[in-house]
Length: 269
Ligand code: MN
Image (cartoon, rainbow, N blue to C red; front, side):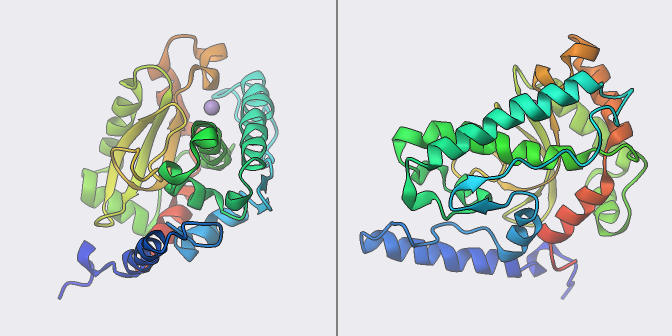
């Protein structure tokens, strides 16, 4: 048997199936509740995001920008980074925490658990948690998907997987840029590890949705790399020229973050 085949990737799916089964039992018992982990993120994934997105009893912390506001210049200007991090992201975080304070039974969930279970969240706060929880997760990673020492090329298993799926790094970049440029309105373009077979895929989501949102996202999986195409992420410098922003963005991409997320999503490689 070829152990490098996608079918050999059993650990994450097996643990997920276990949780799904538990979830079904809990539902049948009328106990969809507070303590049941209904659609849990894998422990590996949680370990990867827990440091970046810590929460204490439903209060998620704003992740500090891991570099100065002006560190990504000239690709991304200081003013944009300040507004984007302190104002937009700060507001998503605040709104998420306020919504969670109204549903105590959801306060113990990690961010990945919340996002994987949006359809099960009470309707009174479901949309708020979808939008602001998505915004919290997406941006918490976005700051780390960029670095002043960025650009270049990925190494190791991620580089191999990109070549295998897309033919080359430049082909992958071209496809991601095309996906991002074609989003109508606000949203995100993603490179993900697909949940059903562990393969890489390029996809996009509107607004602050993301590929963790089971039952919502068209393609379901774990983000390896994501680019924000909301106008607030580029308009001050690039105005309406989204493709110019996308071309420049690769100069600050942090492949170390992408590689770590790939390894966490696909621990068998
Ligand atoms: Mn944004």
